[in-house]
Amino acid sequence: MFVTADDLFYYHFVFGLFLTYAKICSSVYGDIMNIKTLQEALATLKYSQEKFLQNTDSSVQNIFEDSCVKRFEYTLETAIKLMRKILKDEYIKEEADLTINNIFRLMDSYGFIHSWNNWKEYYKQRNNTAHEYNIEKSRELIKVIPNFIEDCEFLIQKLEDKFRQEPYFRIISEILKCNSDNDCEFFAYGSRVKGSFQKSSDLDILIKGSIEPEILQNIQKQIDESEIPFVVHFSNYATMDSDFFESIKNDLVKL
Image (tube, rainbow, N blue to C red; front, side):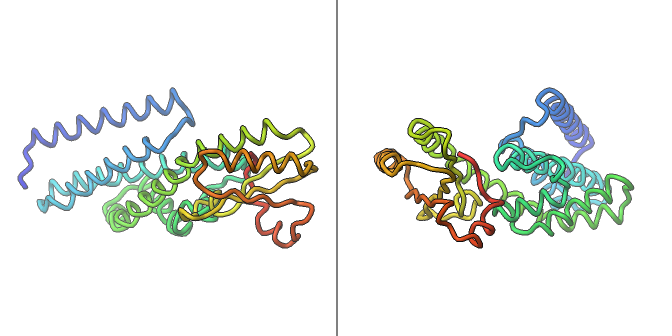
């Protein structure tokens, strides 16, 4: 495929507009990130990689190589911001606990990413090129981009699966709110919280505090008659095995 000087000028002009727009969005909206932002960032990286692989002319390839590096950095930063927001908003993690490696560890433990070590390596590669750019480091980074794309697509799929459940979680939360008082709290846990669920997986809910049997029966009846497409199972903290609770306590999500 032949690339003209006009093509390259247009390409860099459009990319410049993209980066300007991204910076404006970042400054205006701060941490308000969503999956669509990550999808768009990943699409630009995949486009750059495709152009890099298509063009064998060294002078042209160097330009696309540079573009791949920049778009890798932007996509990684977008993914990390989204991970941080989810951990703070959905899993109530404290900012002090969210070191970069802990972000990856937690997202791995919740089933959103394949391997936290992969993401640790991506971040290391990003730092290598961001702090001291050279051809050798750039080419080392280029090698990990195919795996990075696969891992980003996995993350996006898991997040989409999670957010598809959100309307049902809201229904459950509303039923619990309308039928209980301040004497008890409800926490979701298990595969539907961790993101490792199958279509047949149930939702586990832990009850902490006292609740009258007839109230729990009424809650279960309303959930059974709702549009929720999965089984909801309740367990009580008072009768739960202490070792089992220790194994799930970090995964609890308050409803």
